Length: 568
Image 1 (cartoon, rainbow, N blue to C red):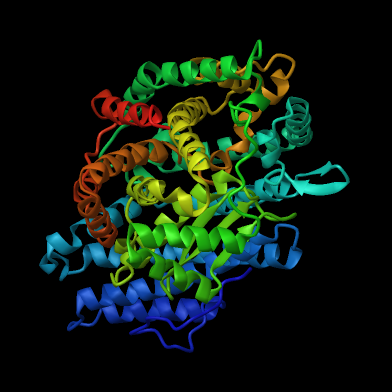
Image 2: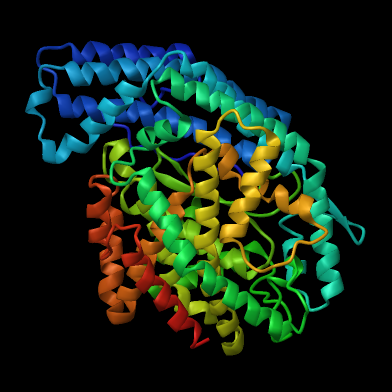
């Protein structure tokens, strides 16, 4: 569903201004340039005025993105998104660049308080340094290719016992007790993905050289290095990522393989197959927390309330605004996300619920993102309303763990233990997957001219390094293209290590909660309210965590998970 409009927080822009027409938008840029040149200009107020225009344009883009991802088979909605992405956003880029230069060269810049404006100025300087006019059309083409990926994957359905089901709706069949049914469902889903393997390879093989060209244009050796700068990863380096990979390989991979060996023995099978990874090892029926999305919302709302009533009140604002699209359906883009409507300062949650335990944690996760946006919404500067992604994901992952103890909202006591075990095992499984996807991208973008066969070989090597003990014999082709399921590789290049960093932060917040429940939640809330007004290390400290990717932090975090697993 499309989100509903609401009252804006405009102080300077006319309420009649609609950011849908380039002539009107261009006139606003002209006005901002004129005001900046006035001798008595109030520079902080001018920055707020710039932020209002940025929020108006961003919200229009986001609304069209939400509409498009909700119906990838609706040509009008797709066209409306592409029209804005291709004809409005590219025209804005050089105008924003000009305003950034106005700020950096302004005679009153030196009077700005660096405690307040230092992070913004650093970001603006970075944007100016990276901007290349010739990269604008390349960015437009990258967006078009991302849309092609979502169109292909959004159309994937399986005919299952006379019904057309999305791949997300096929997920629950991996939890049924009948192994033959699980295998049949897994094969049906894998075969459907395999049908579009070449098409998705072709899309990716256009993206990689395109992104490499953008990097070269900006003066970088490769897209990896450009991504680190453009994502403003000031506080860690590729070498830190490699140390993270090594620590995960040393500390987590053996635990995952041990856990899977225990699963194999419990199931009484000779080898663990991909359709054996989700079924209950004690032959219990699949967890079924809800039937309808309304039940998902109501149950998670109660979990939020138990963490702190503030959160149930905040999540109610999304339902009241119609800012939820929860159920899986044909034509809907896969995955889930939270997007912020920057003018009305309200989040929108998008997901593909299919009645699974995983859906509960997805909603808790996206709810954490939503709370982050809502708690920081009073900040007048848009850039400061959003923290670096590494901390944004702490907001979401920590909420999963803060609400962890309240699963009795959905389940009886024995099923609560099963659901907790699934979540804890999922956390352990996440670290090797993050390391795999991140290492894959490091290789992809430092070898931009690789052939398809070389990419497949690299993927196999990484799965051997970080993978489990599940046997893919006979299904090697499916295993070779498993990376295509990770939409971030297509739509958010070089975005994924953030999940590993954030999970470490979230586990520290959870450890704090075990010692002092009220205090940990208050720290969490205080950190979220900071938005992006502080750097990563300070945001982590505010939440009661340490920003660190090394074994020193990973070891106690994993030990805490393993200890908790012994209680469920």
